[in-house]
Image 1 (cartoon, each protein chain N blue to C red):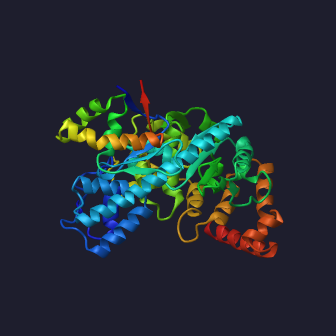
Image 2 (image 1 turned 45 degrees about the vertical axis):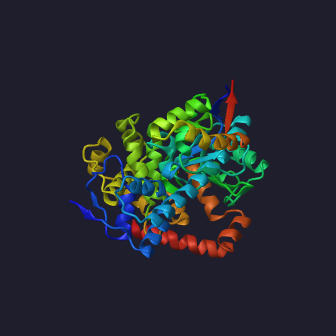
Image 3 (image 1 turned 135 degrees about the horizontal axis):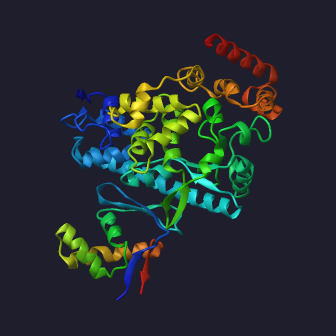
Length: 89
Length: 377
């Protein structure tokens, strides 16, 4: 199963209210990931599968893993499209 | 004693000092209910101007500052906007450093980005509005060339060729993306900047982590001295973010306070450190009585040169021209003094046209400044 990790060249800030502000090496402008973006980014400091990320966030937020997986998958895809994260073997 | 934070100024100071090292938690009494709509709008605008939206959101999150839901959302948006700017600036900074490195030019990252990533608990707490880089005196002109080759535009002329690399604070550039890059050779213009030995600032460095690499920042001693310069001589009144920086650098575990004091004395700028400490105490309510630098500031008796020099940076008569005149006494060596005075009295015609509109008007202004200076002595 593919694992996900931050692109280390991405510039970022953990924003207010748990949001994340990121600027990938290829993006022209920073974009904001609302909600628990900062927690997701924290979990991607090391390579992790979606399930591993979901487990970590579920423990932090007290939400079921499958709900978290549904929430973070589109965010990860958006971050990948912007080159802010990478899929690693 | 507890100050009541019932005015916009008091509240801004309470926000700027929120969670700061050396500031007693009970120093300010926060309002118990949310401010009215207009008052909060003013507060938010001022927090943006003072670059303290990070501390504002922190105070809201930790329930020190009572806000309505709408006010909370406004504060969050304002801080997100500040963070977006920070990242755009960091990218411009990395590109500039890489361009300079390719040309063999050594640079040190100053102020905003360097401070945010080294002495604050989190970089989100320290926003900034431009990029500041320090280069060696002899590399200032080549560094300007590198950045202008990339499309940056130099914002101001210098009095004569090579004046800035010898006597100036540095050069201000604007990139094609509209980012302002200040290339420094010294911490300040005028008498205090002229006493700085640029080579000392490159003897050591600290690593500033940024975008998957590290860039070089000033060592902790020089970083603390620069923070003092920025707070004491930058704006008058100083921006709250600059005063907060002073508390952060003084709290830095890597700082050798005695080395900072020795450096300030060697460069005849003990009064700058003294004023920075006084501002931290008066503006943010810091208690630095037990800090070695706080004790130094309390006891220090500045020389006549320092007192005269400081007057050119603060008060209603502050300004570049006044600092330039006050700088004559700080230039070392007769030939250097002659070159400095010659460049200021008879600069290139394009510079005179831009600044004064003509040589006669410039000479008249210079004469008035000299008379003022003589009267003050």
